[in-house]
Image (cartoon, rainbow, N blue to C red; front, side, top):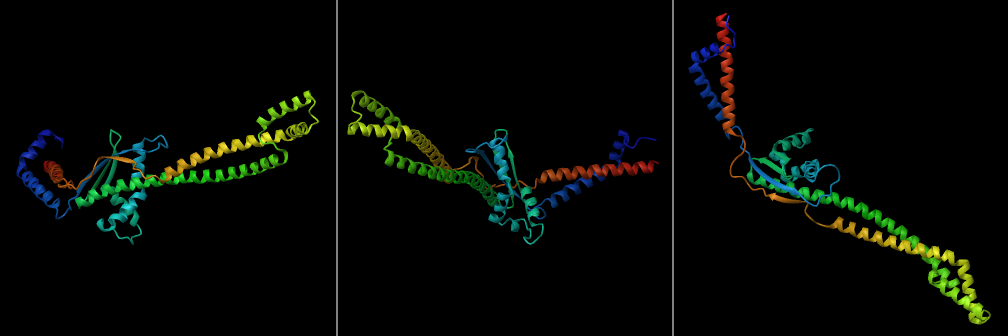
Length: 316
C-alpha cells in the first residue's frame, strides 16, 4: 500500500480536486478580505519617535539607553499616560473592574512598544486608531520621561542638600563654641595669634633679660605675656587650628551644598529628539495582504491534508 505522504499520491489528489482548491482559495481570499476590513478590525495608525539619552548619570552596568528604557517602561509613566489620554475609554476598559490595572497594562503594552536601536537611541512606537493621538502619546512619553528623570535627580540632590545643611549646622555650632573659647583666651590672656606672638614675645623677653630691662613696666608686660603664652599658648594653638579647620570644612560643605541646590532645582532635558513623531497618513494595522495570504495558504494546506486523508481511506 502506498504511503499516505507519497508525492505521486499528493499530485494526484491536487489534480482530482483542482477545482475544489480554486473554490476554497477564492473563498478564503474573500473571507479574509472581508474579516480584515475596517468593519471588523478597526485600523490603527503608527507614530514613531527616536530619542537619544543625554545628561544621565550612569548608576550601574546599564548603558544610558538601557536606563532610559527602564524609566520609559516604568508603571509610573504608564499610569500617567492612562490618565492623560483617558485610555480606559479608548481601550474600553471599566475602571471599576477589579483587574482594571492588569487589563490596562496589557492593552497599553500591546499598543506601545520601546526598543534600543543599534545606534544607542531608543525608539518609541505607538499604535492607535487616531493618528493624532498616536503622535501626541509619543510626545507625552518623552515629556513624562524628562519629568521623571528630573524628579529622580531632584530627590537625590535634595537628600544631599539636607545632609549637607545638617552637617553645616553642626560644624558651625562647633566653630562658634571654639570661637567663644578663643575670645575668652584673647580677652583674658591677650593671646591673639599664637604663631606670630610666640616668636615676637620670646624675642622681646630675651632682649629684656639680656639688657636688664626685665624689671621695667614694659619688661614686666612682656614677662606676663610670655608666661601666658607658656601656660595657655598650647591650648590657644589647638583652638586656632580647630577653628581654621572647621572654617575650611564649612566652606567645602557650603560649596557642595550650593552645587546640590543648583542640581535639584535646574530644569534641563534628558534626551535629544532624533526623530519627532507625526500623525501618520496611512494605517499600519492590520496588514490586510498578509492576513489574506496566511489565511489562503492555511485554508489550502488544510484542504490538501483533508483530501489526502479521504483519498487514503477510500484506497483502504
